[in-house]
Amino acid sequence: MLRRPEVGAAVAALVVFAFFAIYTDTFLSEAGVATWTESSARIGIMAVGVSMLMIGGEFDLSTGTMIGTTGLTVGVLTTHYGVNVWVAVLIALALALVIGALNGILVMRTGLPSFIVTLATFFVLQGLNLALVKAIIGGVAVQGMRDVPYFDSIEPVFATDISLPFGASITISVLWWIAVTAIATWVLLRTKPGNWIFAVGGAATSARQVGVPLFRTKIGLFMTTAFAGWLVGMIDLFSAASVTSAKGVGDEFIFIICAVVGGCLLTGGYGSAIGAALGALIYGMTEKGIVYAGWDSDWLMAFLGVMLLLAVLVNTWVRKQAEVSR
Image (cartoon, rainbow, N blue to C red; front, side):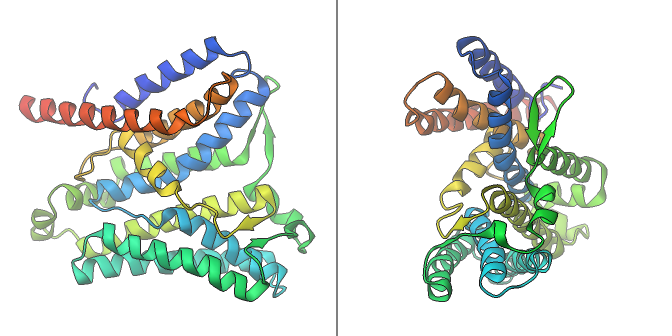
């Protein structure tokens, strides 16, 4: 049990939860719980997708801009061209999956590191989100989503509050987060593609020699992170009813940090979706807990840096102990 990747993150999450619950009065209030669970959910959906890709031995640095790209696609199509909002959401999903597949194909066909390929995709999407959107609508922000026909029919799918029996409420993004984590965990631990993901991340050459479909597995993983980016993009868009060209930029490193804190190794072949979800929970609780405590929020980045270093050291030690005991 102690060798499970998510054990360290689970202990850290309990410590962070207990600390802010005792130190601040707002943390366990109805508004407080709703706020840090919503923040954790948004990061957690992406972190789970990123963790699966990292277990498969690859990185995706375009995940942050993917959030903005999908949100802007829906925003521009509906407010500027009058496309039905449901159709626009499906077009954004198709676009995200195509970009994810292209990332995977480029990585596999060229042999370039995924770090380089997806960094290029990051810059391309960032440039398109800024220049193309500005050329089409004359600005970098899409407003007026609530005036789009059928907005009220799709808003509850991505952005609505759900009342809990004890009086508190959570956003539907938390349910999306739980569903994504559960499905990813089932795939990794109970299905053949899950075995393929661990195999291609831990020993790609050996996996190919025993018949694991390396090409399809890795492309599927890049499409999974793209799907997660689309889902978070829709949650952000329909929650705020607006989106800007800068949406998501810089968040890609937070997703990777949460996956690493949750037990994923940077070398691939080891990790868990539950651990990544717990890493996101730690981030969400810390981000809001620092505000509730009245501390300078600039310390959040310093905290994340220390936490990332400790997580890598602990995970490396645990892996070595597991290998020695085999």
